[in-house]
Length: 486
Image (cartoon, rainbow, N blue to C red; front, top):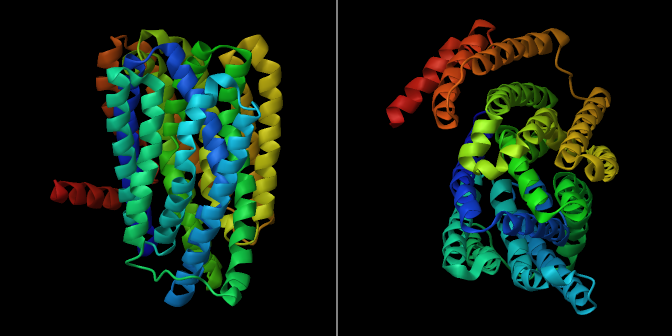
């Protein structure tokens, strides 16, 4: 597990840095631009993220999986990277051409046109950057990919906020976003050339690996698009049925709700390439241990951050976004419930994807998406952002149930009912006690955010130590490790 833990730590560090950057970026942004502009900004990025995902063709997951399977053969790995780069550029050029035609034939709404032209710059370079990341992930050098990604986000935040502040507003933000992919995409490609030998691949090599790269990427793209629509369709539908102001409110609930699954998302990113390697070696027992460990720490993390945010929803929105966004508190609580179950699903899915069950997971994601869209179309016109929160949470729970069904029929061992009951009971005890404490003690929003999180952390650790889910010896080792670093 040492290699897996090293990968998880690298990705966790990158994710944590990304969250810190976002935590600094968003409250500054919402105070520079108006609430209506923020809603427009969110809806444009939501739409573009889906388009960009389609343009990538699932090649990030495809490249990291296939490189991981051939990690001991440098020649084959280099061929895979070269072919992936060529395919990604072809996909990018095709996507830009289609989008340009959409603009010229006025398919894209006029209010978005100026933003789309700017964002199209990011498509091809974003594709190349996804291959750079995939190659480093496949080589289990995740730390390099995360450093590059952090650099890109810092560039975007600093330049974007500066341009928005001096009066360029959304044009400045989207310009900085596109340029960040150009700069880091080129830099990442140069850095990647130190680890892989780039060359024009032979016809034989293209036939051998190209079809596999494109095929696995295609399946991943279907699931990725479904997942992206699952994340973003509610934002786009709120924008369609309501107003940009309502979109801004809803996004203020989505942003913190999605932050609580950062640990499961880290595990998800590490599991695909490691499971592919274990599956190639026919080590199913190690995969079973990996699943159980991943689920345990995902539930612990989701409980700690989810319950804390659920209890402190109003003071968080008040301090972080401002008083105009407190109305999204109930929506945030609804989303946290769904996000908890979706976070657990994120740990299981990459294991299935790396072991031949990719079609089944994608089918479940598509089903959850259809339910989400249907519920949102029904509920948003009548209940606004509350309706969006209900529809999205129900679809997340359905996705969780579907993936558990796949797990039952897969060759992997289900976690025992006794183990699950003990873990759930411990989290339930912590939840009830912490919610009671927060509801009884009344303080100002700012003081609440300073006092309750650390006290909740102590309560959470104590509860799970008593139930045996956080071994004291392991806790002492982690404290000692952190102390030595400090």
